[in-house]
Amino acid sequence: GAGVSQSPRYKVAKRGQDVALRCDPISGHVSLFWYQQALGQGPEFLTYFQNEAQLDKSGLPSDRFFAERPEGSVSTLKIQRTQQEDSAVYLCASSRQLFSGANVLTFGAGSRLTVL
Amino acid sequence: QKEVEQNSGPLSVPEGAIASLNCTYSDRVSQSFFWYRQYSGKSPELIMSIYSNGDKEDGRFTAQLNKASQYVSLLIRDSQPSDSATYLCAVPNSGGYQKVTFGTGTKLQVIP
Image (cartoon, rainbow over all chains, first blue to last red; front, side):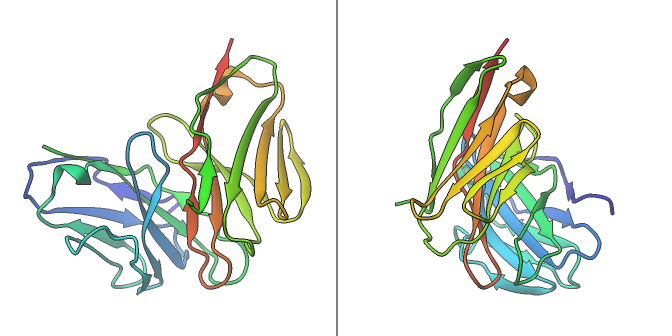
């Protein structure tokens, strides 16, 4: 597609519910990042995929967070047993760069998660 | 020490003035540096990149890099109310797949 598409744009969950957030990156972009952005803060790194391989998940805050990109295109971020501190905007970004050169990120519009 | 540090602001400047936004980073071997602009409720968008020491100009924007001081800045000349946004400094890790680390952002308010 022309841009990075994320869905849903808004999600309200009751504490303890599971949620799934979807990211459809720009076609051909090898790299895919997930970031979490709390109100008034910068984006915080969660995880990185190179094609279907999850090369870095060091930013995932707990084992309740899980991400996948099974076919190297669409990615899903799943949060199990949501807690109020999970409320944030979840940003997906993709890049065509691999290792060399600069990783210029194109962001999706984000998924705003509110946990009640 | 955080990897990328910015003053959160808000930084208020009158319309037509120069806005100066600053960022320091901890990874001495970082090679590339980016400024993203984020309007309220929107996602970040790239506005400037810089790789070499010195200045890089693009229209009303000038990025300045001093690797020895681990310092990168963004100057916005002739500031307009439409420049009011949060400006995020981003630094990819050196080597590997270049995980991109963002600062907390500086909120800029341009007063008409």
